Image (tube, rainbow, N blue to C red; front, top):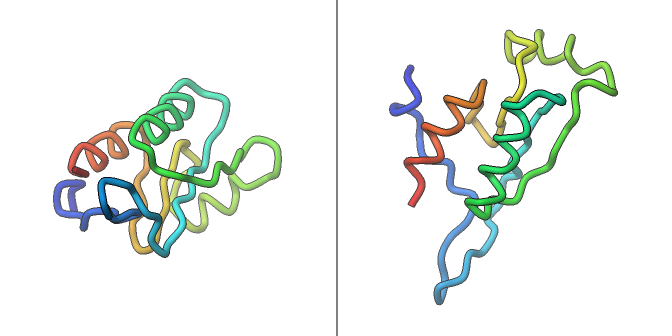
Length: 97
């Protein structure tokens, strides 16, 4: 399945011109690399609230390999959507209106 085939991540709804958070948290697994920094910047610019999880300090890389099949960061996870790497995150968020 390609990024364009994934369902749109609906983490808010518009009401009277304001974004209102819906159920389902957005988790961003990051390290100290440039891609992780840019992914955080992108989510903030889009106004998407997220929980940042630094995988360098807490031994989560092994869990990431088991759960997501990779230790690469950043990873965005929300509901049934998992995006691995900055390029997939960018492509997916470009589809949000």
